[in-house]
Image (cartoon, rainbow over all chains, first blue to last red; front, side):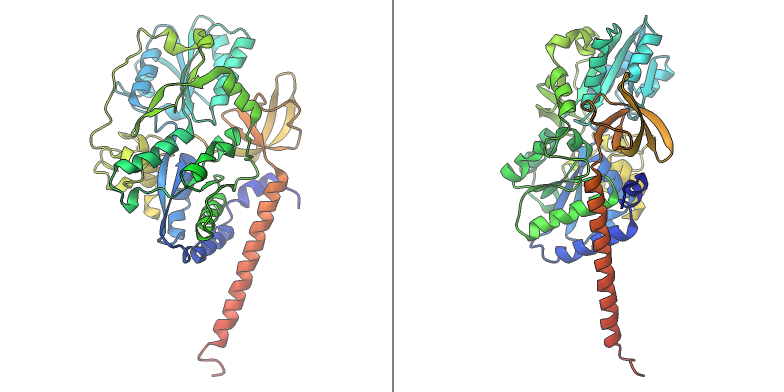
Length: 380
Length: 96
């Protein structure tokens, strides 16, 4: 058989294969000593799980905890306010990825800034900044960079091109965060709460595309030091079912390992060229405040000091607001992300907080747990 | 944000370090900046994300997965068939 593009869609979404895995999981789950809670770290997985009604296919002793892996959802209001203030500056074109369009800060979203006359542009690719900068030589083009390990190399590639092409009017505001640190935070934070079954993460479905870049090696410590299996899993529904099946098999065989289900794209070492680009321009920041979770040490990246001339946070230091902003009092996104609550338990879910008017982090993007429940909740 | 799409490389522009990829009939350009030189060839299947090729899809692994899934389904079908025969044997109306 020769591989065709069609296989990569159809065969990994095939209903019979999904059903077959459901049966295998059900049989295996009968041998589990205890129920297991699997955290799918990545919002892409949350979306697939909800869209394809995967919880319906699983036995009662396997549950999901929806993780914080949605870069738009975790963006705190403080950072949105930075973007808002920058966009309001004279002669600034603020550029960011389309997902950021409606994330509310304390003054409103970037969409609101645009309606007030700010030049905010939503792009598909960071490289579009080069074209915008060349077409507007008198403007300062500021790229508001977001995302996990998946998108950091793309921002690095943009800066690499800016330097090589000697483009003088592109600057970066960096909001890149890293996955292992938040996973550790979620495991550790469990200990400060009542140790009920609900807030226990037993295993992780490892993110797909973070791992394409970083390799599976970044999760080694979880089975080794935290006794949590990790199975790096693809985004298609068959991938997710196979990933769950692999986790269940680890439990019934009394193993605790790092495994890759998504072998067609993920290796242990990952994409070396992308990692080198990231390392060339970025270093660890002190901490990053995650919306709904608070400050997490070592979880954010910043530009190295030698690239300060491109760093919007350095250049515009005087005008960027510094005050901390509390999350909405009624929003329970923090608890949802820790696996202690599910979206329907929130008093403002679906009423005051909806995808069209999100209040909490999990409702902001279609990859957030609340948005996925709102859209597909009738399936579970 | 992250739902990257498998695509097929249909053109490579070495000078610009860009490729044209086909995603189920839709063609678009993607940067090769994250890929090692000469790593990507015409006809390769790749993963595309925010305008960049992130990685090449390993055809052998993809095919192996697909084969495994087919075997699982066949095995299930066989089990179902066996189950049907057994159920039929146990049918109280048998021979009635």
